[in-house]
Length: 246
Image 1 (cartoon, helix red, strand yellow):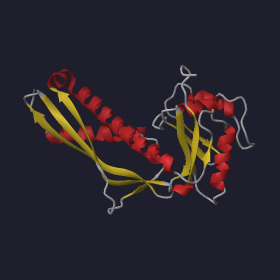
Image 2 (cartoon, one colour; image 1 turned 180 degrees about the vertical axis):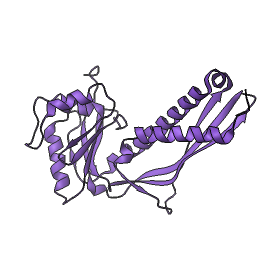
Image 3 (cartoon, helix red, strand yellow; image 1 turned 45 degrees about the vertical axis):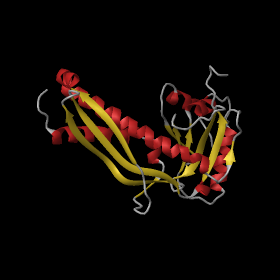
Image 4 (cartoon, helix red, strand yellow; image 1 turned 30 degrees about the vertical axis):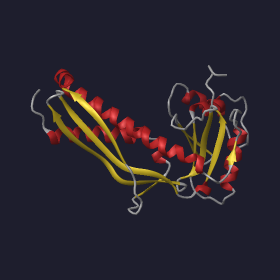
């Protein structure tokens, strides 16, 4: 194994990881970032091993793969932590456990949000199986909901999709939790409902381990999601059984 340039390696991993994280997090774009120094947020540490054999076969490709994998891990961790806060929203609840999601329910959630006198962009976050219920609906509720059938073409086969609707951005992500009874808890909210306190952005350190014939990467972020204004969010509960479970 050639002697590696520690600073250059860490810089390359950081840049690739940072780019991947920003491109793949969906919920971090829907909430407010805070640098609150009074809150004590946990460190999130992810390690990765760059084996000598893999580096010798293709150094650049191996580093790119590591950067992408690390970035995706952090994106998933952040979005999952934000989605877990949906159960704490207190602005209202629409939908029923065990029942499919309908456009009527989305319309009801929208009315609850607007009824609070909110003059802000709204985000509606749903699990892919909740979204499937909507795109497969034969009809849509409310005159402001149009071209429902056209939405199916853009979401089909995609893991995520953002679509504008009545001043609302739909965000479809599997990080929305499904409970033991196969019900998903999505949400409709404004960006000030939930905060992410970001006390340290990404950092990368590397260390050579000659015994393992590898370079160990240690990455770290210090952040945490917190409920800021729970009354500014609506819980959306519906069945999220997969077709195989029905």
